[in-house]
Image (tube, rainbow, N blue to C red; front, side, top):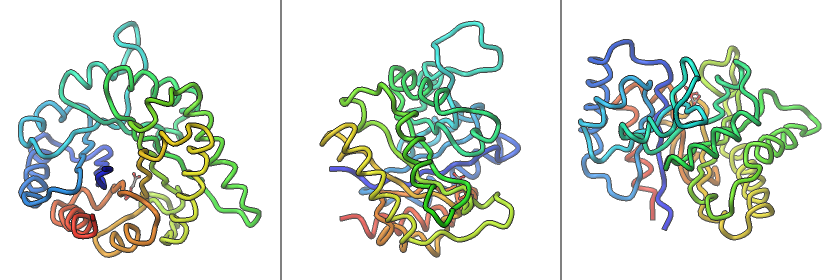
Length: 254
Ligand code: PGA
């Protein structure tokens, strides 16, 4: 059975290890009775190793991973290194990284090497704007096709797809709220692309929604957004709010 999953993307927060430990312990405390929901926290790289020791229940993920195992890649961190210190997931293709120049083909290489390293990739897709002629569907289709090119059928269930419309992300200036209908429509579209490409193996691939999710609208997205979980940014920096989102997911899990 696919468990629903709630993923916290801490982005480049918090500033110190001490604060990171406090936040993480707060989350761990708040989710003690949770059984049906998988929980993943993606902190900055340098906190991973310390946080790993604080909870068995929370899975850890990174926010990026370079392709290649070791070598002359100044400033990069590989999937193997991340696995070695306890990460089991990795966010790839986040819009904030795409904005710095990361291409679908870069992301494709990272997905492949992360799978080899034993990490589960969380592939972010989503359009920056919505146009009247619905061109954003083609953009998401292209992101999926290029990022997942050459991925084996047997690996597709390990990949998580996070639909994150950039216009709904909390850090986007003049952002707008996405609705559960927006999420459901895109999730059906993504599911169809995955099924055309990978067949029934893809039915186990989880599709998530992300973009300013909070404790007030989480239930609406989980109930009506056609998704099996959420990717939470800003609200994951507040242990209480994140814990509430996890509990909402738990109650709604069959
Ligand atoms: P947000 O971030 O919840 O703060 O909008 C989500 C994300 O960018 O992953």
